[in-house]
Image 1 (cartoon, chains in turn yellow, brown):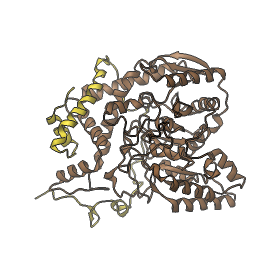
Image 2: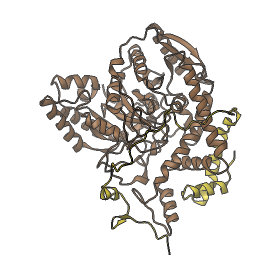
Image 3: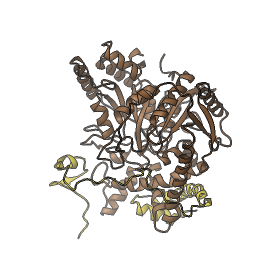
Length: 95
Length: 490
């Protein structure tokens, strides 16, 4: 599987990672090499095999729907690059 | 070099109990060793004040007859992937600049509550992605062992700082995390013991996530006994991690009976790879002889899907990483690089904040999860993962443990294998299959190669059967008679 520059540009946008134009080509080459190596999986017949999402073979535990944490707004906000009046801030998104 | 920094946890426990040394004395000896060993870059953050405060509290408890047990007063290093309350936590990444958690990970809280003394936070590959500890924003880590040609060597990764700290006698033991080999491979490269428990044995809560279906914390120590003692303190069910196993923690140290008579040890044919290093093959053969000599029965087994484990891992782990690392958006913590719009800010922050290997893996993960490729790659890999796990399940119907080499080579020189990502990924060829199956595995130092560098052997066990893994490892350790001598002291 070979990835071209446009594909890399697209997945970089999907992942919200800025990649400079001159880095697209080398990155496409690296990712193509890795995906090419991964391609060997296609030779395996996996028809009828269940996909494994977790090795933990139990259904996830349930708990009562009650508040069991919280009241720590300031501690949580403390690490924000910027905050105002108890909120996180972001660049303006609505005109 | 102080004799105090040569003690194992088991020895220090006994000396502390006998009043032959104090935790403050031990801690001071290690703080001095950390300072002297800064050239290795094993630590990102040193926490001497906190360490001395906890050591003093430990000594005070002991004086009152209120010792908390084997780990009370033991100085340990913590991989900088565990969130620590009030102490900078970086994951080796620029994007977590200045992040100081307001909470403590369950594993480090368990250690703290058992009285362990945190010396500092150890260096690692960025977000635990790497096999040489060369991708950290805080610089590469050097292995305390030096090659015959005098070249600086990598410590392995991703828990390279933890391995270097223990091998360099800058911590009595350390925590690591293992997603595809990140405890076992650096343990092998640095001549120490590294145990990856069964997935679910240790809580993942508060440990910065890489690939959530694989990540597992474990101890990195000088001896198998120390690994048993330290895991005891780290492990246990935690309601805050829904994948943590609701099981009692057995007495791991009690498993070290030294008696492996009649145990069946499997030797997987598929791990004998073409072009395998002759010294590693010889050490593996030696390991088989040691186990036979102690009464174990050695059985040839087959794990037919072994060769597909690495490609499977390099779909599953990046896919999970791309989701987990979506949280680094410049809003809630760490680095923010401003932009004209919200999207622009995200892209600038993530473009600048992540290093090359992390970006590469996020992009791979995004690609295999993207529309049109999801079934062909991600679902395919999950199906192959089922087959790999089934190989082990079948093998463990006939054997009690499996013996393999830990890594395909000894520690290599800094700067090697950096250009070709696939060559770097192959470091984990023997460790990744068990990670995909969630099995416990340990690496113990079993010998030296011709260049005088340590080589590890790996023992794998059934899910939640760390006891057999430890028992077999203890016997191998005794047979190998390996003693830590990384050239930094003695």
